[in-house]
Length: 180
Image (cartoon, rainbow, N blue to C red; front, side, top):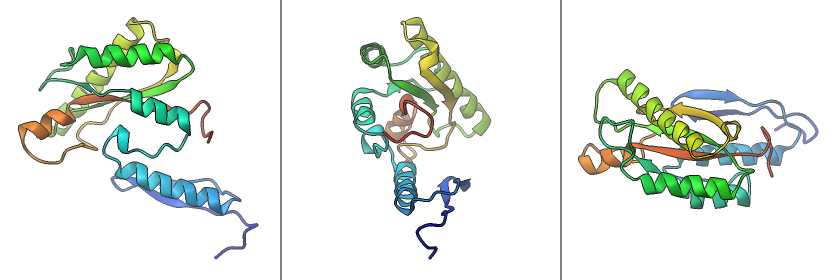
């Protein structure tokens, strides 16, 4: 083990075999905390299970934001417009909060590229809707479609597939790399 005064370098397996290299840190506790939080985050299956690494504002965000579900092979219309409307209202009531928009398909289709494009289209539909409802574009940090990665339900049945067809909002800290 290195003495406490020397920098620590951590290699963390983030997800799906991707390795992230952190910058040297002089604080072993912070390094350990980031390692544990990253591991817990990647194992998380829903917003309610996530570690709130960025404090109470993130916890409030995760509790308030609802998943926006979509129908099979659909990207233009959500099956629950009320969920999206409630999310937009919460975002209007909390104007300093920044966020990511992430789209997902079901794993029903075998075409990985098609599902990647479909998930990106779902995320973009939500992005355009949120902007159209008055949320400034600069609050959206990134819009991403994850394709078949990270399903919330891995089973092969209609009930499970419908749970995976969704768009979610993820909290973004107030400044890059900040721990509140």
